[in-house]
Image (cartoon, rainbow, N blue to C red; front, side):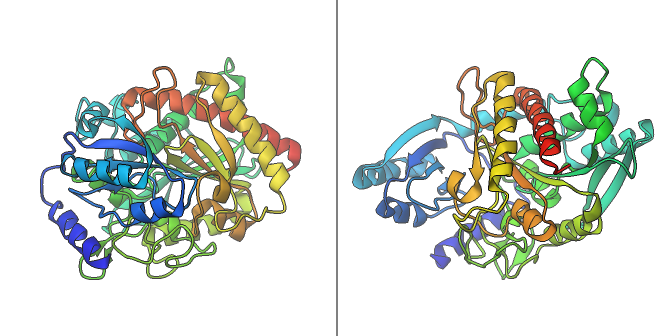
Amino acid sequence: MYLKSAVVIVLVLALVKAEPFKFDNYRVYTVKVENDDQLLALKDLQTGPHHYEFIDEPMRSGQEVDLIVPPSYQDDFESLVTGKEMKVEMIIPNLQKLIDNERPQKMASRAAEDFGWDDYYDVNTIYEWLYQLEELYDEVTIFRVGTSYEGRDILGVNINRNPGQNPGIFIESNIHAREWITSSSTTWIINKLLTATDAEPAIKDLADNVNWYIVPVLNVDGYEYTREHYRLWRKTRSQQGFICVGVDPNRNWDSYWEKGGIGSSANMCEITYAGPEVFSEVETRSLAEYVLSIRDNLNIYLAFHSAAQMILMPWGHTTEFIEEHDDYMSMLDIAVTTLTARHGTPYTYGPTYTTIYPTTGTSSDWAYYALGIPGFTYEFRGRNPDTGERYSFVAPPDQIQPNAEEVLDSLGALVGRARELGYM
């Protein structure tokens, strides 16, 4: 297993100075994992460039996972499906076509004044736009979380119209590099909070009466790597051993962290590698330090991911309920109901372990564990609710605004219920 992964990572490293990896005729299948034999067969697949690639790692029986199959492995996959009697559905017939549609304009960067939501932008363009907002709005302050492994700034924006009075919400976005719609939706939400009028009372209430701390792109190195080299990259870009690169930054937090624990890997070449130690990654460590420095200002912590269409709450490591289970479920219930009302996007919600799969070392669990505040993980839409088209985390840009609209609606409902319950 380790040897296979090592070969994979050598191939990944070879991509660093190459043209972007192409996924022509790569297919994506949803596989229903019905028993442990099927689970083990999936876990044993060779993954990485030119091989299989999981969108969601197989963790337990009863789970559905999305698996990318290259054309050269199509016959092997069909044999596996037949031999293990797996139930599968092809959801994307040509992944490269979807990737091409994701960035039809293919602009490396645009001027901040031309910033919009019809494309996905590089980190520098996003930062230029944030600095422009700081110049335009008195309530906007740019804060610096830290510096990434490759030396990039990690920046966030604070929006606070009533300093010293408003309860606070922290949003962390794009911790997984390939989940582009998270950061683009986050910037749309930032813009809407700042421009909401009296004709939009629910949004204006959020802008006027909440102290927002928002980091649009946490995994800046990984995000840039997905843009320039390998669209499916998930981890950070730190060197691990001689040949492996990156740690899963959402398995690296000090919340029941284990190397190779539930829902994570001890193999440094795997996409869910938890790291050599807790907070080994400068990105997660810096964000945790920053959040702790403002902990007295925070009431809720939100992590934005894609694309399972869920809102998750603690715990990820156990089926045991937290003490505030009923309160948190009440907040998520109204958030999901309100989100679905906008465009009809179906969401589920509940504790991470039973709603999606077991995990350890996640940021939202850490917020609850370390700060004692609600920590929720959003998994944004992975399909177009109007057409039924499945795109997972390779969302075409026409999905940015409707996704952001429904998420912002849900935030308004969540805040309202949190106030009723005394959390804000």
